[in-house]
Length: 93
Image (tube, rainbow, N blue to C red):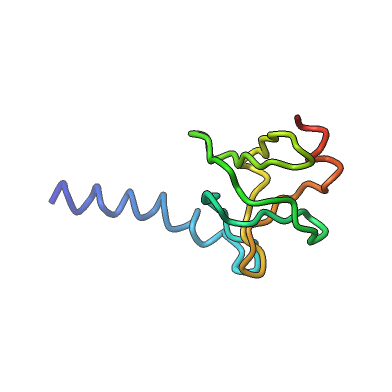
């Protein structure tokens, strides 16, 4: 009886959080080495060179290693996309 009560409480906590996610929102992404990263306006930035422990993607752009924060990365239209523009990414180095 105690286990079923615990399961009901856990469902009451988890289900509302899942229901609040918008189906139209871009999916959170885990960057993968070799996958092309595109900017907010759709321009190609570069292939992911390395993924850090916190999910940030490192790319080489204009000869510089730049770390793009993981919280700016999502999948939009099947593409690994950052919410940053190319000029914002270039300022990160």
